[in-house]
Image 1 (spheres, helix red, strand yellow):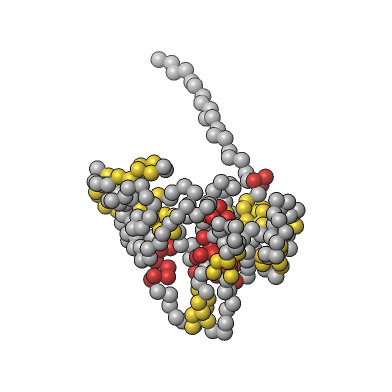
Image 2 (image 1 turned 60 degrees about the horizontal axis):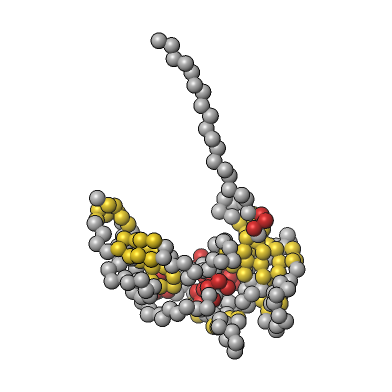
Length: 259
């Protein structure tokens, strides 16, 4: 007997997913989520920057580059993929099994292929190809959940290491009087590309140290760099990541029991 959660997903757009030269490692998904337009350059497999429309006109809201009149509602197509809907507990015997590099999954289970920004659902007919109707790109809905941070040109923050794909941000780093300038990345060549951070402008490769709010409300340092304009890309400073607390060994008191 198995109890599982059924997640109903509708894939509305068919997208061809290629090996994107690991563009996911540089945080491109957030720009796609914001409706920004990519700017390409010869010799570069990934866009070198994006043009974004964050301007809010009178009595309008901005969503994915569109200005919506006041009180106009977003359609289900705009936000559906960012929601978890149709979840309920049921007794079932899964009839499909999906074998992936991440392990085995049964029908209805969700999984995230490594080094991608895809989310997939195991279903009948899956043969190891991470493509529709089994997989789609993650939707962050950043302008719905973090519209203030986006329009203030705060910087998306990502947890994890340099070997992890940067998909939806784990938080946002906003300008503060506590920000510190850091030495620029020496491996970056001179470029005219620039990022915006609040009212500041940083050249490609320039860095700052800001702070982001952790899940428990505490502030942690984050290293931000101009990598793919117009926003900075931030990661948690590994020096300030608390080491995991080692498990404690319980102590016992043994008493002799007399007959």
